[in-house]
Amino acid sequence: MRLATLADRAVLLTEDGAVDIADASSGRFGPDPMDVLTDWTEFQAWAESAELPAASPYRTADLDAPVPRPRQVFAVALNYRPHATEAGHVPPDVPLLFTKFPSCIVGPTAEVELPEGNVDWELEMVAVIGAPCHRVSASEGWATVAGLTVGQDLSERVLQLTGKPPQFSLGKSYPGFGPTGPALVTLDELPDRDNIAIECLLNGESVQAARTSEMIFSVPELVEFISGVCPLHPGDLIFTGTLAGVGNRRVPQRFLSHGDVLVSRIDGLGEMRQTFR
Ligand code: ZN
Image 1: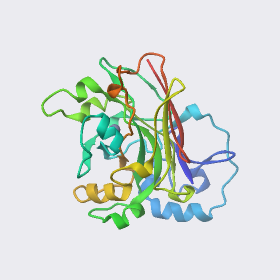
Image 2 (image 1 turned 120 degrees about the vertical axis):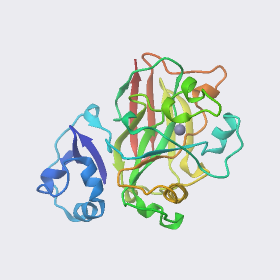
Image 3 (image 1 turned 180 degrees about the horizontal axis):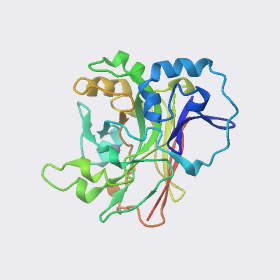
Image 4 (image 1 turned 90 degrees about the vertical axis):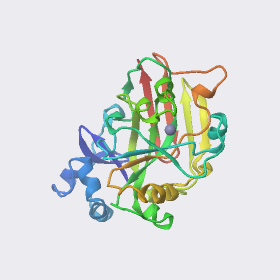
């Protein structure tokens, strides 16, 4: 299923439109998308057999982040070898973690205000936690994941790389720097959850393209590593790392500017579209 947020309410997206989850379940689940995730196991069981009412048409521009208020947002640096190489590093032996502070999370068509500095794109697949968990092994990793979505780890490189050693998190947390969506897609919708095509286009030109099978640390391995320290909550997000082709490693460098259109696309998960001012 495809879970999304429309006017602050959790909806299921179908081929015909959107179905309000609180209405369809007579108030049992939702309307707050965070409540649906808190009740994830029960909600899934209900959704599998529920007779849904007719869907209503909606505008893609009205979709908000499928997980609007995650308690924790984890992000992984250098998780694709070609990106580690372009950044001038050897591929890491253990996952490299930072956070995007949750106030940066916005929806799939959000217009993003550019702060001073050099704002760069980083397309990433994002895993959404469904089951509360702590210290799970990689073999149980996928079972803790409610689904996947598309994310942009937008990054202001000057602030990100200031300081010795640099502290990544603030430079990646300006308002609007965490677009996600258009929907949380459950794993049963995907032909191969470990091998998905992923591509980012700037003004129509492909700037990043890879497959998620090229990740150094897989989603289950990231869940094992992170949950080994932090208890994970329903709705927590894991940005799983970007691929090669970011702007600050290009020659010449290239950064986002007023009027640019950034399209972020992952097979089976859908597409986001950001504009900048
Ligand atoms: Zn990133």
